[in-house]
Image 1 (cartoon, rainbow, N blue to C red):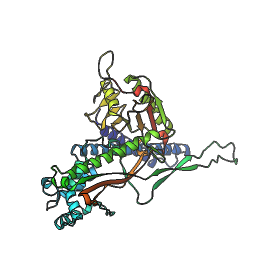
Image 2: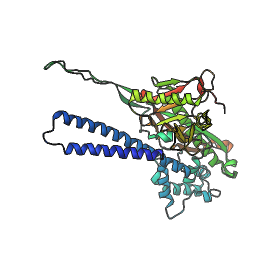
Image 3: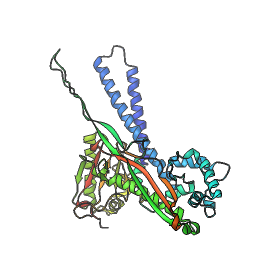
Image 4: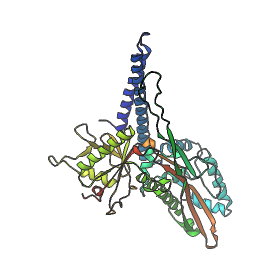
Length: 443
């Protein structure tokens, strides 16, 4: 069967060759070719080009996700960071803040001491800023810091749910300035019709436009610690606090992107006018059929094939646990070329886990499990990822503030960042599955 990336590559290669073949036919067409035959070739060329472009986008997405999976295995936040880490670590002089001297020289402890006037800490902080100049953004004041590499690696730990779905989709850079992002949309199209007779009026229907808005929202958190704990803790409380704030931020961003319900800050489960399916039975065969129906709804109403299915890990594991009554053979099996509707990849608590009907399955514990009348249902989302927009303003900003509690020898650590998302550009590119059949599964 091969990997999803391999299949996407083969599909793109086939579509590209088909486009070349039709282009060659047009180029070599005889001079006396009829207008009808030429129009047919041009229509075939347009269709082949659209297929090639869609296959190329699918292949690029598969390659990006494969690279992200490889980066995860190396405990690197993402492939972009991996390149940046490599470029920094190749420098001749060792970095000021690194794992092998984290006990002696701690980044956040130095940040607090520098703010209190410690000249040696100030010098180390200045040297660190020079070392990380190429990968940092301009400081916005208020104590924002460029976090050292080994702490960024710690940030990728999975003590919390993380953000596997957003990692699969790819998060865009938030535009500078403004409290909202407005995206124009086309709400109605033109029309064509057969001309009733020569010199008669032809069809004229004006297209209509609209827009969707994404509000820029702040996600933030803080922690106060004593100077004594900052000085004496081992491992350093500074590393523990920052790591947990960062992981909490990641989980919150994805939780909101899935189930947020504020005006113009709606998660994908709260987008209006999507395709839907409801399931009341708890069998995997029924769920599989409903999912394929949801895929068909996207293809019928949006004219593109979904590129992923999002579900909670418990739902995927429930599907893995199911077996055919006649043979006790699993319904979803490890990757196999024989008679399967779905295939499981390597075990993974978050992110890509396999495929159903050839469509990648992404699991995230940020999918809610307390929905429905019994407050025990999860949801299944089928969607076209390239149509989904999520933004964030680079890495979260960290502030160290020793003055807030100076009278009590207290230092405050604060994290904040700006995010936005909009999944409603094409509501019919989404199918949402719900119902009592998605209540807490029994194994």
